[in-house]
View 1 (tube, rainbow, N blue to C red):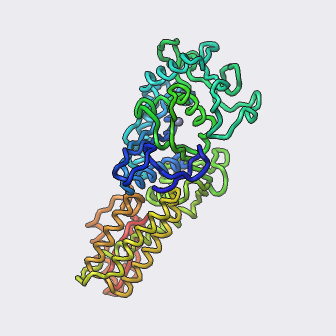
View 2 (tube, protein in one colour):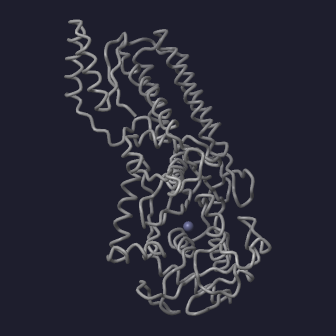
View 3 (cartoon, rainbow, N blue to C red):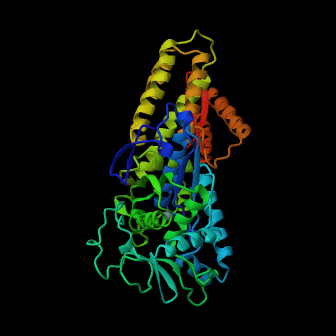
Length: 473
Ligand SMILES: [Zn+2]
């Protein structure tokens, strides 16, 4: 990957995993990535999934470019919301969060998001949090108030580098952190919180309590990777204060850079507005599936917008995503129809390698998938033209299918059909029956069979090569 926009430096930086340039990609150590994951108190919404699909695209693209990746995403299973949710339902915190963790994994699978290498849970990383707090304490950077421990921002002079927030910006009394504890300076944040009544707590060398949110990510990065990591991702809303505070804790505790590249994904809007329950435009993934939209089209729509641009999620956009996928499916069906052996077509061969080259050129430039997908549809168009001219034989079709498989290691929507399960024999029997009806000029019957198949999610097409069927997206 050539260049990547780094929130920390506010510019496109050359991408050098490990911080030391090598002659070839294969020589680099695994790219270490940490992504802020879900708080498992409820179903994740599609704004969350925009970020999670981006994380997936990032790791897939790095692998496509020849890197290996070592990727962690945390599961926040203790905070105000999870504690309140468990109390309300009268179950233990673990029972409550295990359920939503499971749901989160199912949703990821539904969207064809690859599992990452590590899913650390906050409640299983308390030892690493204690270690950070002990280091900070030794350096005199924390203080205690009413049983809670706070990080003293005034003593960390580099505070504000990531978000560009200065102490002048933080007005006295402004509420920017989600805790209600008293502290010496409004900018300070809680590392460790004194337990309130009915709340779960852990015994530590500095007393009973539970973790603040920010410390969790710093602790997990340390626990899993041990030292500076390459990439940290999250939504733009996490830059301040969450990521700023992660840097403060980690760099003050261990005196080494925390992260080389900070990548932040822009907001998702729904029909032009910020998603909110009161506006009625708040959707979880399952809401969209209940409305009949396919996971494949949702993945396509979330993945193909540039991560640093706001994405306006609309139902028209989802329909268009389905149409784009149909164009891909049509090409695949046409390639499958090519049975004739012919000498290799040099134009097709050249076009394949040219496509991969232009795709890489586009996406290497700050992960510009929007432009990358443009090069992909140009490629599809040109292949269709060659098929129209009947210039391709079986070997060419195989080569092109190979390219589609290769690029789908990044996209994950070409050969992925989500949860649609088809009974091939039943479909072919119905198509056979429809062909018979057409031969007998019983078009009413033929049309009704086509409609029946459509209602089962199958599109029937009559082509010069005969009748074929595709799975609707
Ligand atoms: Zn985080």
